[in-house]
Length: 111
Image 1 (cartoon, rainbow, N blue to C red):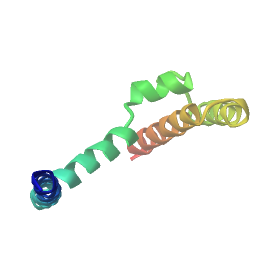
Image 2 (image 1 turned 180 degrees about the vertical axis):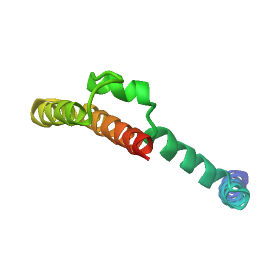
Image 3 (image 1 turned 30 degrees about the vertical axis):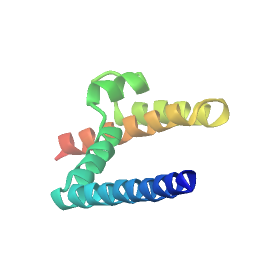
């Protein structure tokens, strides 16, 4: 009789504890969404993955500050095709981001 009572107490107690953890987790998510912490963190991650500095972009493509836009496009096409055939997707995206960065810089300088 005591063992049965103890087993019931353990089952009910663990159920209460599990429900309280779930409720606390939901409340933490609600608080994070109200304060904007979750959205801000997601935006920071997106910004960090897309922004590349101009010197880094030039280094990735192997061009100098005095290179013409045609030379940059030639290097971009060459590196992009090489990585498409036998390289990695990561390097291919780095090359693409470098071209986007330099394109923005050239458009800015043209205006």
